[in-house]
Length: 238
Image 1: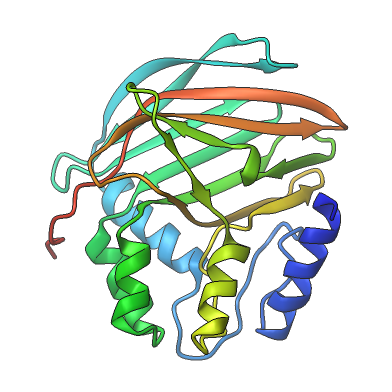
Image 2: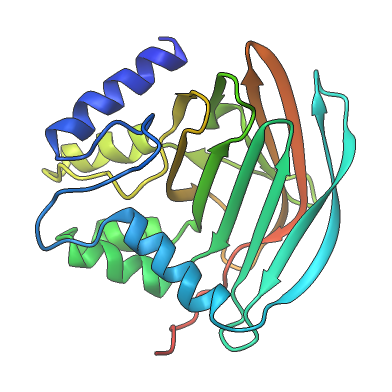
């Protein structure tokens, strides 16, 4: 199945649930009395990152086309009150922001939407990030999270579990809900963006490098964000 067809299938499912196509510049949700993923992620960022003066750090990551790395800067923001971190990288037509999510926050989101404890505790047991992904190239951008890798300093790999994998498990349990999750693959046209939760199979508190791959007009690009960290499993405070 091609990236475009995967995206089309996700769009059909999303449309049936009241969600517009993720290829649109504005992503809106019409489900009544529910918190949309833009509200979840944007409110989280506003609350934990932007309403206070962040600690800004500069890191070097390797990014470039065809697997050849070129250095670029990544901004890391730390909320001194909550301790939550976010990583923002922009290069080669791609902008991505990844914000730590406390497991307690993830549990609250999914328990609100009716998932049983077994299921919401499972996803909260992953290394979770609120993710905002933008195509800044002015061209066509393709990605598939199956090409992404989380690598620890010991060489352990953390599998990124896709939206379709979660959705399939939840459907078997009678839960027809998945639109909070970052789409597993997509074709983005100029100005397109998407957001949702990215889930990585690593223990809470683990440090790792995130290796990203994407295509712009068919040309492969590769990026590496060094020294990311999963949130610890602590109870969030108001």
